[in-house]
Structure formats: structure tokens, C-alpha cells
Amino acid sequence: MMKKHVFNIKHKYAQYLSCITNLKSNEVAIHIDLSENHLCKLSTEVQSMHLGASKPQVTLHTGVLYVNGKKSQSFGSVSACNDHTPEAIWGHLKPILNYVNIQYPLVNAVHFFSDGPVTQ
Image 1: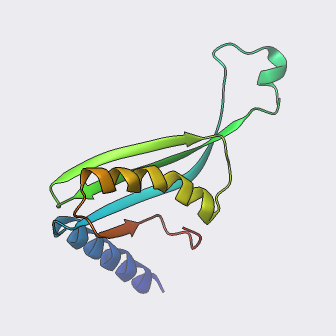
Image 2: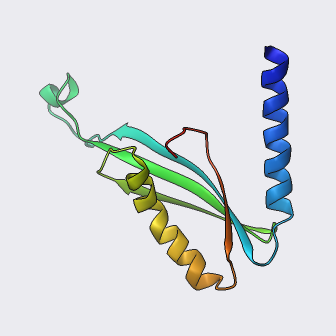
């Protein structure tokens, strides 16, 4: 079982590396790590806040955009919406895809890499 797992990891990494280093002029790759919730804190808090108050959470969406295998650009957004649904993920990706469309108008293929949840 362990051999199969190690093989899968090595194969995925080889395919990932091959994809981002061999991008054509009409392709980009987006590596995303989405839906990480974080508690908000205040710089000064009253004791009741510190001892279990219901603190608001935000979701961080981070990623890296690869263009032509040579250029990369990291990006991130913060959202008060803590949904991890496909619709919420597309809501985060829409500005990134719009950016790609404006900055690289010849791109007609996007390769997505993620940490693997089925919903993404």
C-alpha cells in the first residue's frame, strides 16, 4: 500500500513539474490552496474576548499563477464567507481568470492544480 502511495506522489509531482515548465504561449497553470479558515484577533482584547468569545473567521484563498514556465505570480484573497463550496471557490478564482484574460489575451487553456479535495 505504501509503495502505491509513494508512486502516486512522485508521479503527480513529475506531471506538475512537466506542466509548469513546458507551458505554451497559449497556456497558464494555476496552483491553488483554498479554504483555510482563520480566527480574527484584535490588537487589544477584553478578557471575555480572549476566553472563548465567538470570534469572526475569515477564509484565505492563496495560489500561484504560472505563465510560459518562466514567470510566476502569487495571489491571495480574504473572504468573510466561510463556505468551501465549488461556487465559493469560483467566486475567488473569477478575478484571477479575468486578470489572465486581460494580461494574456492569447491564453485559451488553464491547468489547475490543487491540494486535492474533490469539491475543488
